[in-house]
Length: 410
Image 1 (spheres, rainbow, N blue to C red):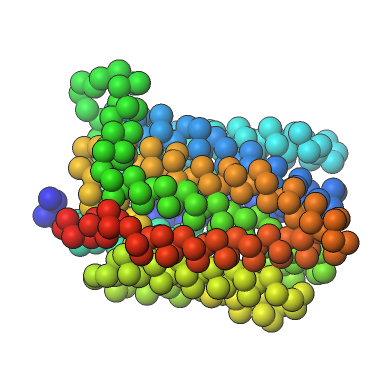
Image 2 (image 1 turned 30 degrees about the vertical axis):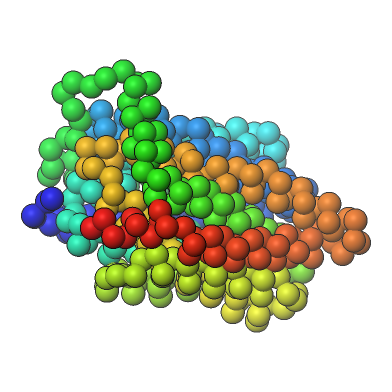
């Protein structure tokens, strides 16, 4: 166990990730509005999101192995730097005229492929920097940084789109990469590289990551549940935008997303200051059930007031659930296997997003046509169904003895 905290260095690294999240949120929001205006289809928006996520899923386990083999801070710098190439490609295509859907898909995929190097290295670096008592605080701040793409980016993007076009958003995103690389470089100079001098074959290391996760019944059960949770969350996240855009404009969407994400700001700050001291499984169960209720309420009516209220509730709950799952997994994994384990955990748990992004947009379009209610109400119905399933998952989590035992191992 580490006796010395380097929380200040973590804050610097976190600042870089916060800025990166804001820049990425600008691009994500702008591309979503751009594609929906061109196609009027929730499925087209889902394809962009899927291609932006798929490399993270495919490369997370190999990236986890690399995070244990090589300098984790250097991996973050490489991932941030080269991920800008995809955004530059989209910008160039738009500067020459309207970018085709396939060109946007290609640029998003390339950017996401390099970004996949970042997550395992970043999470393993947190373990390098902090003491165990600081993990829950760090998790709250990490959730807060992730929420910036929903909290800060939408309102900025909505305003900028009212006075300019998407190219300005892409330029700003490209500029943020320089800041995040600089933050990682400073951290790299202050702590020793995490790479091992000798290591086994790549495939063997990946298998070890699998065994770290699979051989613990509690961690494996938690990861499987996480995959279900990400599927239902993904349905909510991908369909919230077409739901609102079906009866309102991009500026209103940006304001609504910011209002909703304020919930994550509040709970992220609470976790960053106080953390969670005990009752992780109980908190996880309550959070999942409450999130499901908010999803059901979110799709009730085409009215911005209840949408913002239930959206705020949903996002205020997410950091508590994420922090609990993060703590239960992190404290049951050896430090030297953190990179491989988080890479495998990321691969398995985020399989749910692939399903969500693949089927939710198509389902919303089909339901809207079949019931003659439009894509907006079709999206609302899919979100509500996902909320019911989320509540069922919370009951499964409560009844799982292997997950409960994770909390009693420390």
